[in-house]
Length: 365
Ligand SMILES: Nc1nc2c(c(CN[C@H]3C=C[C@H](O)[C@@H]3O)cn2[C@@H]2O[C@H](COP(=O)(O)O)[C@@H](O)[C@H]2O)c(=O)[nH]1
Image 1 (cartoon, protein in one colour):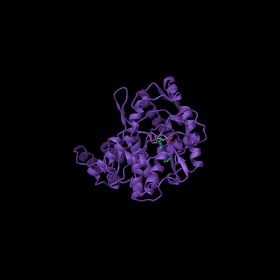
Image 2 (cartoon, rainbow, N blue to C red):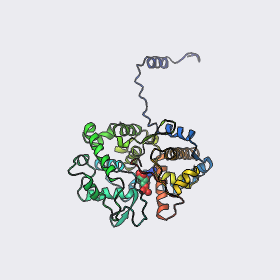
Image 3 (cartoon, rainbow, N blue to C red):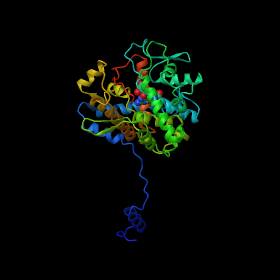
Image 4 (spheres, rainbow, N blue to C red):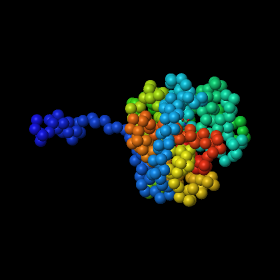
């Protein structure tokens, strides 16, 4: 065939496509990266230091290598469930339905804390410990039918499940009950009360599962209007739910997603803290002072949207830099995120946090 003759098969495919006959399955996208890049490109109160981000990328990668960070790291945490079965899918769903806002204004010895297996757990780990403790006490806290039963699952019983070993109770308890109730309602109406049926509905796509969670559940729809009116998608708990499934099941079984690398960093209150400490993220004096003075930054405010969006974009740039210098690295935004979260928790435990995390109270993170 001479150079100027087009491939007849290709021409036929093109003709069918133009006639709308081809069922070209479009790959699902979450829209998170595109919307946070828009905020980064247009915002004026938060910036990314490219040089510091590149330097941080190299340091992060070498420490991840040293600690051999992989999906296996997830199950090594003593409180995370070990069984690779449906009960663990239900555990992870319940955990990430409630995985938000543990921070306290009280001193460490007075803040909400859970005693379990002879240790005192705070923050995210207080949630995991409470769920494990409830299951050991025979409370079916990971069962949607339990959440549906108002006689059994109510503020009273949740106070027991999340009972503290201090005077302070778990923050936003009513909001957590509302999340359980809504999830039970949706699972009953659309998925026959089956969480694995919901996971299966995503057909092995991480982005599709994130979109299903955001579409079907109000309490997973973590998206907020930026000052210019554009809707910015963070979808933090929907994304960390998919990431926890992927990590727990080592990318197999209920954790098998062909597009897992579409998941971004999870915009919470810990990653911005460590990115600022690394000098990778810069805030205007107004935000910097509010964070230093532990002032409330309202959920959905322009400062909060910029902080979360630029943090996600910063981790994306760090990920790209790692891949540029180490093309064969098995590193995605999830593993970088897990590493950064665990690192800032180590700094907290050692009393070495350079700056406080920002204070936003919401059900989104
Ligand atoms: N971005 C990001 N945010 C994360 C986590 C985790 C725990 N993930 C575990 C699973 C694998 C990893 O190795 C971790 O061991 C919790 N959080 C969020 O932080 C906040 C809790 O903070 P504090 O109150 O200080 O515990 C709250 O918004 C919670 O949703 C993460 O990994 N990434």
